[in-house]
Each structure stands twice: as C-alpha cells, then as structure tokens.
Image 1 (cartoon, helix red, strand yellow):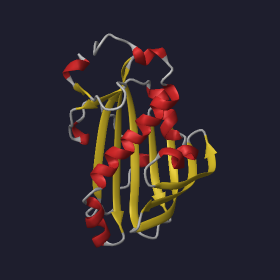
Image 2: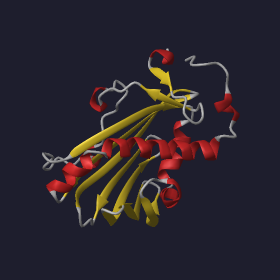
Image 3: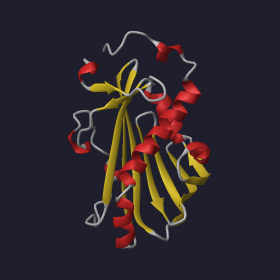
Image 4: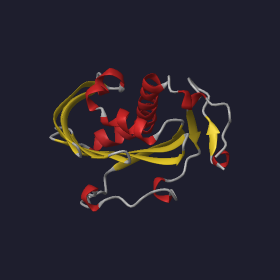
Length: 203
C-alpha cells in the first residue's frame, strides 16, 4: 500500500505527498542509469543532494514541466534567464543565467538529455565558476494517481571555498527547486479531475 510509504504534505495543495527520505542509491525503484549519462572522472570534491516526492500527477505531466526549459525563468528560484538554443526529440542545448545575489551570478550552457517520460538529465558546461554540474530527474509511475519523482543534483566549484560555502544551503535549494516544479505542475494541471479524488491513499 502506498499509504505505508508516504506522509501527506499539507502545505499548499493536496497534490504533493512527502516521501520519507531514503538514500538515493538504496531506492528499490531505481533503474540503472545509462552509461551515456555517466561521468566516472574525479569525483572526490563533488557534493550531491537528492529530494524525492510522491505526487498526484502522471509521469508525463511532471516530465513536461521539467523538459520545458524555456519557462524556467518564470518560476524557478535563482534562474534569471533560460533560452533554448537548439532542440531535438532526445536532446536540447540551453543557455541559463542563475544568480545567488549578491554573491554569484553565472551564465552557462546546459546539455539536456531527454528520455520521455522517464528521465531528464542536465549537464552544465562552459561555466567560469563551476567545475562540474549535473542534475537528474526520474519519474516512476506507482499507479494511475501517483508518480515517484526523484531529483538529484551533483556539483563542484572551481574553488574549494565556493564548494564548501554552497554546500551549507544547497540541500535547501534542492528542496525549493523540487517544490517550484511541483507548484508549476499544479498551476498547469490543477483543472484535471484526476487529482481531486477523495479516496485517500489507496493503491
């Protein structure tokens, strides 16, 4: 029963259900990542943060929100500009400007790999302050009314001082990013009657 896995998240709307935290690599639902998406170079100084939720949206709906990079600047915390430079069915290239004012404002290129509706992988490139940046979204359908969303971010700054400083609040930033995408999904899909059921947490 899904009710044994989750606690209701009662902030905002009732479409979001908080998943009790488990280590990202211990998830029984996790599929093996494609070798094309792996980077096995030096990882000693990288920081990694993960957030997970069970939500009352289909995996396709959540995927569509995450894959719509053009709209990031409208709702994503600290995203000042988002411009898609090129796109194909399974790959996009975008230019993002992010800011943590007054400390950091950075423009960089993102290569976005698309596996609709299961996975979105984003690799940051051409950054002056980031040595490594990768974020990954995974969407797993639990049943017709529940999707498990996993958001994982791995980063490393050129400067060790920057990395240590950012690690102090990056976990909170990861959770705010997840919430921003789910809030966006609620705005877009709230009219769908599927998400106004009264049957509790039945599987």
